[in-house]
Image 1 (cartoon, rainbow over the protein chains, first blue to last red):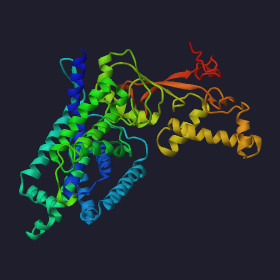
Image 2: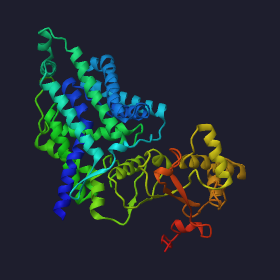
Image 3: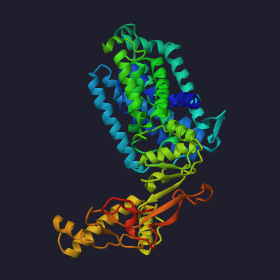
Image 4: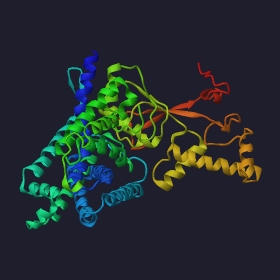
Length: 291
Length: 203
């Protein structure tokens, strides 16, 4: 019986991996392609959740889950044009300060507008309920999250690795000067990447709002976990963040099976272990401009 | 459970694997919202009770997510004249019922104000001495509250609430029903807090 229980935790770890992947993917993208450590990622996640709550009451759940990330992505365009753009070549410390400030502005802004209390929000009726495979339990909503996370990964992978657009972006990561000397302006590419990364944060917020409390500090709650996933995966690695999200989900599940009080610590221990063995993270690449 | 858990699913699986008679929560703040939402997501049917609780975190969970029996220092359905008056005034000013934290803020200020008036001084030392004399204060409950001199704990009535069936909720605030006062009207108020020697005499 014990083996079955552990297996159940491992399989649930895959679902949890989708949860971590959603919150980490946008962070990883902006980090990998723009070199910005976006501490405001949690803020955009919270804005996505609040927008989903507001929009769901007016245009329905399904539309809210689509429109909210797009609006957050548009906000990402404005932020990139006005702020991020000035910091790609600057000391990373400055962009850390910028995004840290931005995170506080967003959190307090939400508090001023919506109050400190959490806003009520539930899973839409049609997605409630559980799917049973044998004795294993899978909430229908988590399976939806898994499907959306897979779709988001495929879409991001296609854009970055299979289009001419992605080729320019990846070249820009390695060597912006040469890309510039070929007569290509990187600016619109970076705007699009920021919109995508910030939009993914909004998507995570909208999707996780029905199963988390929607309150101003919700972004800060997930930010650390998102960073742990990105660091374990390896800075700049697309596949690394996916592997790390699944690994964190499974390691956490197994730890909680044996000792619940170590559950949250397990991901930090995993990070420490990975960094000891592979200082660049699981699939960390060598990026010239960060050397 | 450690603090600051955002995803409860592995813990919920463990609860389900152990087939408990009762799930007792000792979470606090926004974690309670996360927990009750995901407990409802996994559709677990074991009865839930809890220790620390605030009405705001239950109101913030959303329809169909809140379940169980929970304790409160005060809630907006408390049936005393002063409590009803407070709820009506708060509702009129802010457009929503007051939660237990607002009750706490309002009454602690009133207690200090009343104590200052009684002793005609704002000296902190004198105030503290006065509060330790067992002075009684109206805290909108059926019985007056007082501070126990040997550990400075406030002794007063508590309440229990039970989550309502979602179908019978009138609005987003109408999510629980009052289960009465703890300790009961004929019991000594101190039985819910351990007495001086620290042993529990509830059983």
